[in-house]
Image (cartoon, rainbow, N blue to C red; front, side, top):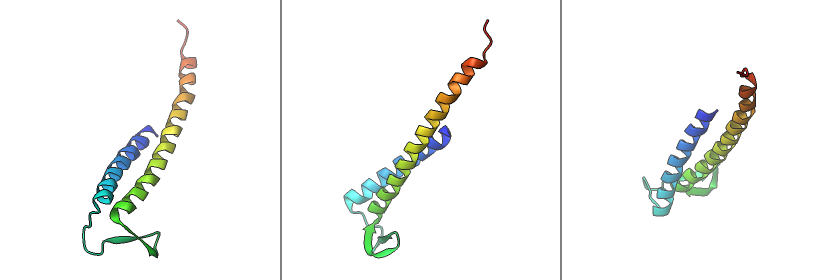
Length: 87
């Protein structure tokens, strides 16, 4: 679980930086480079805004994975100490 949390966090960081650069500079890859939000042709966004929305979803997923990984580690720490024999 921890590996997935780290991987998701790294991808979140890359997509966030890419989205911020494209959104702040209003960079257009090609003429008419706009994406409909969830398939609605009335709401058009540039690629930077779309990347920021995707980064938001990745961020939420990453936070949930980190919480679950920490909870799992805390649950197994008590069992590890109880399994040891007294010397």
